[in-house]
Image (cartoon, rainbow, N blue to C red; front, top):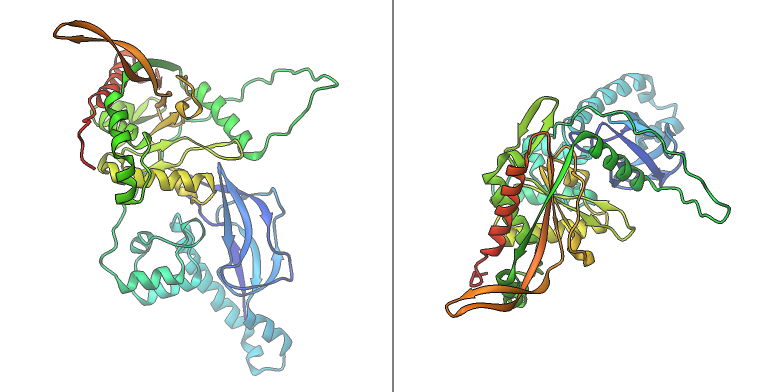
Length: 429
């Protein structure tokens, strides 16, 4: 008996608007709860938005490529009850139709507040069950969802209720503080020849380009490099990788070990785990490390591994594999890319020995890891110096010179290298 408004959902604490990139339905289509209505894009993430109700698409307010603020009405769905009432105007209930519509609107407005307060989308069915079971919004936020982009479905909630009290909670991380945007760089004229090919940037590439230019305009970049001897690390991984995968069902790469070393170093150098807001320095409590992942389409995304310093190597490996696979297959929720405090990019995956990465704003430093190669090295022995073959790699740190000077940047990078060089070759798995 009422219209149900489909709102642009809140997709993250720092996300205020999203672009509609595709509609899966049109006006007049009959839909069921959880049917995908439209696709949206926020920064580097694409998400499909499902319907929270059954009914008929009565009105669509925005076309493809429209930029819509969070909370704005995107479409209206006529529920099944309304369709029946329109075809049965002689019903006694028709006299009080306006009264019922007002009640439904009030209830819809009330339940929609949950989605406005939350970073996740909850269907009315899930919200109703949560209300009946006295599950608070904070408790609801801790439930892991099996739906698209981690959406909590009815089955997830019922399973949680059955095992209530044993679910782990995840601490919330404050949204990053961003500096005021700087003016756009002047456009440089480009000549185009008759035989040249012109290719329009896709949406993600445009965003990446804007971010990279903004980062260079915001932070004075300095890059420092060291070469680390990671022979012990290489020998250890070669020895345990098969047993590790058999025991835990996870493939261990070098990246979780790099993350572990960085997290330890960030605990010793808090200014490297920071942001700059005007003339204020915000030292971040949590060590949320972003990992640059190259997608099959050639674009780059940076999912974030939260509280890396609180996880053991197995936990880092599991989280890293999950994030990397989810990012490559567009299966991560937008929040998986939020609240990073430091970033690692792996140039070595492309057989590059070193690089000078651009800082991922509003962070103040980014580490690049180069390829690991066998090299001759001089080692001291009791009988004199000898030349031996060692596994070595370059680490390069780009940092924001507004708050990190050469002494601090160099000391932090050296500490990361020390952790890798001192890796225990007999470490148990």
